Amino acid sequence: MNTETIRVQLNFPLAEATKPIIWHFAHDWSLKFSIRKANIDSKIGGYTVLDLTGTRENIDGALEWAAAEGIEVQVGGATGEDEWVIGR
Image 1 (cartoon, rainbow, N blue to C red):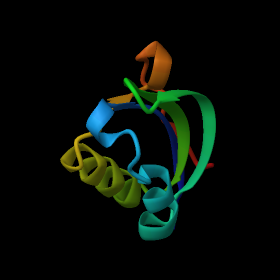
Image 2: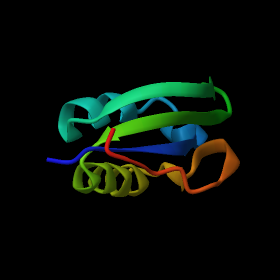
Image 3: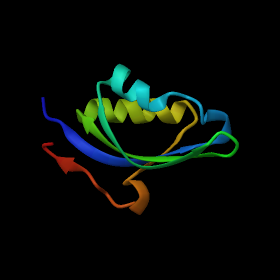
């Protein structure tokens, strides 16, 4: 099974700021993650920039699930560039 790594930015509106999204990525979608940057405030919401590693199917499924949970997903993270890395 090939694994890939993608950098994403998750934007959390205030109402969603306390959801354990990253925990679900690891436990429900079998993804490894590295937090690159984050700023979450319980009064205004915030963002997290992550490197996610797993199968493309699991990464895509996790990001679709997060979007359905009210999290804005930006592929490419803080720079907005396409940052897929094959074979990690």
